[in-house]
Image (cartoon, rainbow, N blue to C red):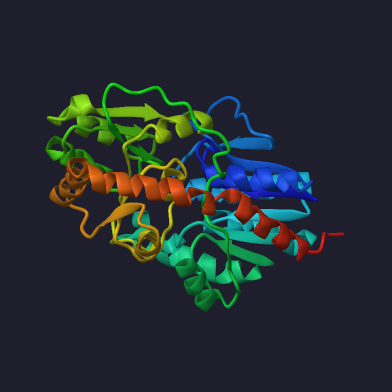
Length: 366
């Protein structure tokens, strides 16, 4: 089948969709992953499937999303896919519109609780619009998937459709990653540098954190602001911004880290119910992590003690938790050995089977 996958990011660090599209390709389908071009876009991505990035004059706001609907619809019309894999609510309008006119199938993939993201918390009108878009269009998709058990239950109640959970986990590490010993131990953050990720508070905490450097991998809306904040910090010599990295390079950097951080602002329901891919990336690399005390992380860590939870996103609490791990070597070694032991249980190879089952239940378009 010809499958078009729609996202609105620049494709570089969307590792879940890299894995999803690779699985679709391995299952024998023709796959194109479509995103947007921006100033951080790499010329070519070393991926085993076709990618396409469309230029947009505006990168945010109503004009950007109107352009997404227009350009993605006409791209679908030109490509004539059998299946559209629509990721999050900001791509579902062109997918369902195309389906209504030309009768194709749509798989809706919810990576987050879209109208509850931090960017919409204090924008009631925009939040209402996205809520209405979700209510109207999500039930019209043929199949539905999401990233956690909590979100699955919420979405099933909201939209009256079953949601299959496909965990946001990496491939199993089949061979040891060779990591050169850095001059000092470091904490790693990987992902978007956006509002609600706790990065401002983490930078504020760094002067009170012992021994460790902070390596930040990624870019986003707060890239400039966070760099300015770092330049004003007493710990500026221990904070590094590495920008975007290709998956293999990121995997090497992650494997050499002392700790991973996955800090989120609990004001957003989308974050409260999340299960971020970085959590599993740290786990797969055998690296203990510090996470928020949200339901999915708490339940996981109760069964598999591979990291710590933080009840409040405050600089003193962050420093206290991380310093505890640095000071208590025995405790740290237990966390690390557990992560190394259970990492193989949470790999993409297990989730890939769900994608195969999903496609078997969809009839190819005429």
